[in-house]
Length: 115
Length: 164
Image 1 (cartoon, helix red, strand yellow):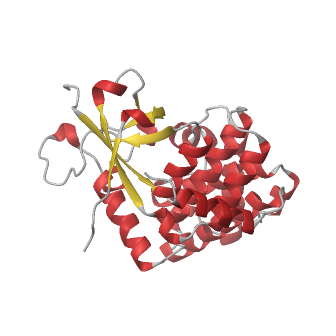
Image 2 (tube, each protein chain N blue to C red):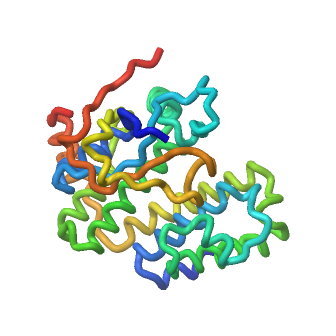
Image 3 (cartoon, each protein chain N blue to C red):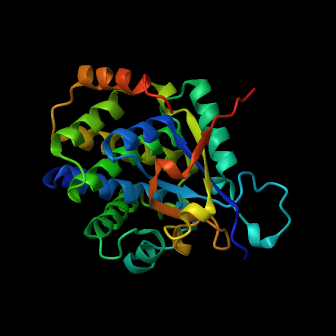
């Protein structure tokens, strides 16, 4: 269902997933997945192409579930929210070589800094 | 509404340190004119729990104490740090190598690194930079919430609270 994001740069895919999750978390108050009303309510950037794809992603989720997102059981919505979050973090690592050792070393330096 | 004396903003230690090191000590914050809106009777002060600095602080403290890396506030903060780094890179505010360092830091962070800090911001110092949060992004249409996109470290104090 979310495979189509593979063809996009990771930062673009992350924005799509971020917006889809933002809408999904308010699913119970979303009557219809109509682009413009949702854009006015949830988008940071009114011209965001990523937002359009986020709505398409949720439309495909509705098709797969056979139910509007507002009628999803809370545990089902939470499940999809976790899936979107996991994908967000996976895409964040996709285009670069993570270096956990460097991350830990930098964190140690930061921990020595006063607040 | 009269200008507030102070603004309050809850952020994580990790977000603070990333801004200090990579964004020249400039912090992007959401803030509110009250710390804990519970008990305020004034209808002008409708601030829902999702926007209350007190509630955000309490939730983060609790999630860090439980050690729940997958809890919503911590996941949101982690995602926010990555998203912020993406934005700074696109805006040419950081270099690619700095961008990668931020990602490595965020991905290697321990749950304790997401502990909350409370920023206390004198309104007079920041009034010209304060923007009202658009109605569609507020926790409640009537709530009073602000964004400061570039908050210099010299313009706020930090306190931490013990939770028992």
